[in-house]
Image (cartoon, rainbow, N blue to C red; front, side):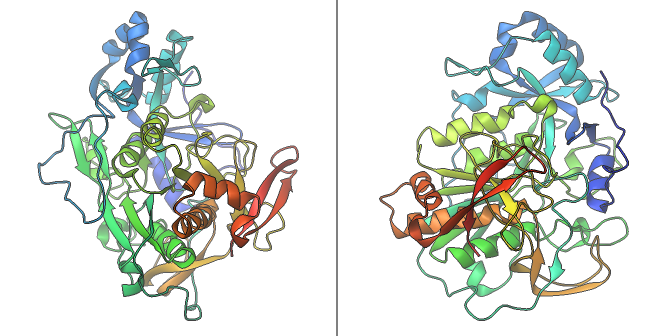
Length: 477
């Protein structure tokens, strides 16, 4: 069964960034009623243990593809690529842990499509599942495409529309630097230096992607977020996604001033996605393999916020994200991992938010009385917070931006999306943990949900996307 590339009239995106992701030469996609699954066209993710248990799967794989490495691979393109950063612990994956079971394969024929091949191979491997450390994982597929992740995607916007200029808030939104009592790791688009109060709290690091075309394959650095030519479309407009991580950093610093922030910039380097050349020469998305790698490297904070949300082929849980979660949680079960629900106005599970180990956050509207019109919703989520018309730090920029005419930003913006509801929850957990480190972050979240820490909580029931699913709403400003 080939991918369905046909959108219904109400589904087709009018957002330039979404169109660029779907039209990238390195991507393929499949349209269903409620979601569009996007994947790197020439790559498959395979469980080594499942392949070992299915000789036929192994044989069919070797006819069409070649293995390039595992999620536990540590090879760097250059020995000095990953620089030590003060106060940021970098932890290489356990070579015997779950990450070692997750392989990335490269399709030999550029005409082959990863979604097509994943469907075919999944049928061959029916009933075969990964095993992590001797423990079967019956919910995980044996093989999948390498899904492309954007920050809380939807049919129409990524995130939900462009940012809009805002006046500077009253003094006190960002307070002077204080010694940190906790650390939040944000895996998102990175961080653009902004002002001294925020810069002092944020340590930016570059994410990495696995270059399957290198000889030998290796991790290569992702380009940093910024406003230069590499972050503009063919018409010279600033990509709509620029500054997304900076906006989130401001939200966390505002709500939790006693917290240090590690901002991991994770948008894959387009120079290594399509060796045939052409396509869009600017970072638009990250693969799930790359995001999982950053979770493994930097998952040593007290709270981890993963700003990505993506649906998967067959709605199966993400293989590499699951392996990364297991590796991060094993040494510290009390860590809190937070992710947005996504903006598809759908009940289809989005990952990593749908994992039971992750606090999945939907968005309520500006009045905090109902689901935000764009927000995904369902029992696979844990809570919600306001995601409409959110104020935070942004870039200093004057000029054209995708989705807007020429616009001037003076360090502040209003934006909306579930990816701006999730940081509120992450910051509240971090602030509670910083105030009382004897309570693990996950327990601090449980306390917040029952109204502890002075946070008001009510319930929002949505009848539009799902049949009356209620979520606790944290009123966090």
